[in-house]
Length: 246
Image 1 (cartoon, helix red, strand yellow):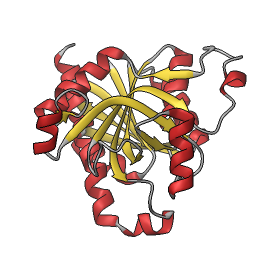
Image 2 (cartoon, helix red, strand yellow):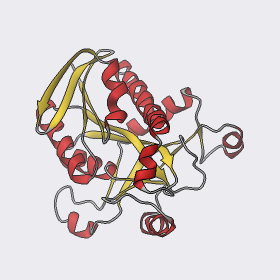
Image 3 (spheres, rainbow, N blue to C red):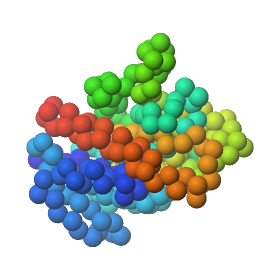
Image 4 (cartoon, rainbow, N blue to C red):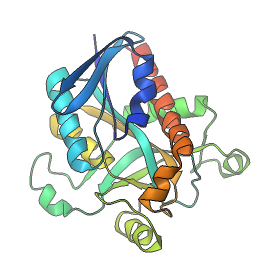
């Protein structure tokens, strides 16, 4: 039975996924709580990696090494950088770039890349699922996007190890990466997936506009749960679409 690995940085980002698995089994592995089960004929393993690139890379490598998934899907929330995007819109990470890393040095090791990507076939599946969920493509249908608050963008995600907040950090992130949103894990996930030759997909729901301090951001618990569930609900339907194609 094919396996899909699903990773989030925060527990709220994978809670819904764990709830949907049948025959769920919980184990403690490599500092992670890993839940394994089935979803529509696929074997699924899910875990909360913790925040930051090291946590994300470690969790990804562990799941790949132990479970040999055909794909790794990373779902969660991010700060918006593209002015077209609003809170609870979604970015599919076709391209993923490090924000605060000397990428030329990183590229001296396998897989020899300075920029990473979600697998194109999975990007297409994600876009189709988002349309089914009532989202419109912010890059293609401007008039529809103006009428409907639910948008998605097949774009670029920036990843750094610092929480981006305030005009100066936001502007610096845009100038350095030209990304549509910024977070702390996605590029590391895609990096390790590429290093192992495994398909991957990184998906982010916009939770803020990089205009809040971290403490204030965390106080919006109800809102954050909603945005995380937007991403995880879409992830579940993406996995179901993958299962249907097997």
